[in-house]
Image (cartoon, rainbow, N blue to C red; front, top):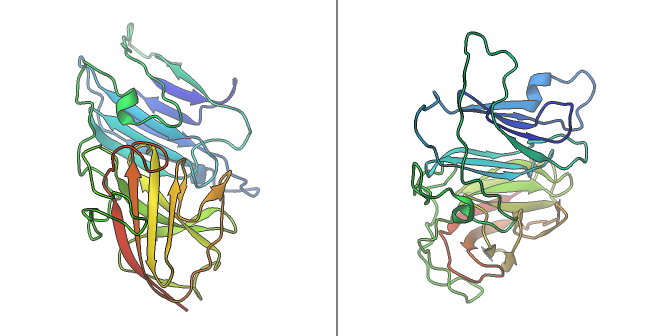
Length: 290
């Protein structure tokens, strides 16, 4: 392993990168007894390792044993992992970062060399360019259009204004809203990805207390929401998770939608409270029935 994020020793790390460029996640929710051990493990195979060449690698991690966890990874400016969900243990211990070669059994190898340089750790408000390596093997700007979760059927964010009256144009900031997630506000868990043209049948949902989270490709300074239709509402969120109706320490505020048609738009900004430059917005239309 070349990188580990571990909560305590001894013990297994909850995030680690293997030499085959494979990212693995261990998470432990409040599972009942006799739960399937494989249910808490995820692996992302990134292909064969590249030798004798510098790689620019950026991680964006929000540690959580709940559904609001985030793991994103870029290699040479290209996003290769975009995961939302549990990614750590439920033990209340703060994580620590460890780097270097870790191998219990070296088999026939007598020498292994790994060079690590230009390490940067950002704060909770840092963006991609704040932590991206400089001067090595790749670009420091995320590759446009590489977000697998982006809904191309929605509005790309070319409108110059939103209902709150501010500038809502799309800029070349590298920031974008890539998807929406419908949240159960009773349990604070994800219900489903919320896409353009969706119909929410209240009679078939697990609750009528809902919220909507905007998912961004990098940490944004803020995200502004504009909801119109059967209900008109606007809100700006400065810290993740970016929730349409807000949250308090990851406890999502409930929204009980009325039947009707809606349009929802979310725009990321480089600065807090809708300041700085606007990134690429995402807009969807949906219906609520019962």
